[in-house]
Image 1 (cartoon, rainbow, N blue to C red):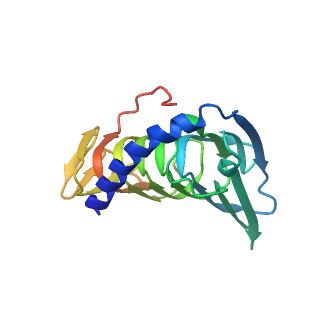
Image 2 (image 1 turned 90 degrees about the vertical axis):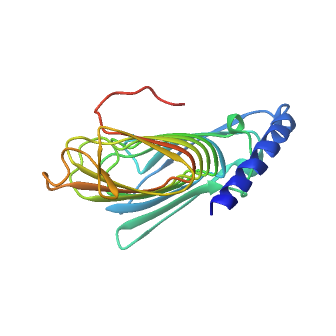
Length: 242
């Protein structure tokens, strides 16, 4: 797996620069999109961003409220939403699989509903991301970091246990974790480095002070991949990454 990730990173680094020059003369397009939850009382949301810059947060009145910038029609996002037995299924993806694209040419700013239970899957491809999920009512979270940099904020008022899975890919990730609920992080090997602040090593896990003392637990599994992962359970504020 690590050899494949390394080859992916090397291939991306060579092609992104060439594609950036090709898009310089293409006019930037902007599209706004709102998707109502309808009859859904919970939802599965998938954001499949082949490459670019993603800003994601909660606090929306509707299931999804977003602004999308792109330079070519084939990069225009597609939205597929349907409801089955009061559970919504939303998939947002590019019209065509991008594979390689300069991150400054494709930007998504997305807000998700505040309150509706959501199972979220994010495939980042290549680029930068700022995932501020403090105001998203998460049931489960799966992230493929791909190639690039990610900031993930999982602090907030957790009222239920939640499973989080993160594929570290190639690059760096900074993960902010809550202090008022239990946190247990398992990190698989990979070739990356791990730095933990506000957590202690307990067997094969990193745990915070609240773990085992409160009824709610956040279980996080990280594949370190190639690069670095920083875990912070300190309650400190941060600036937005993008």
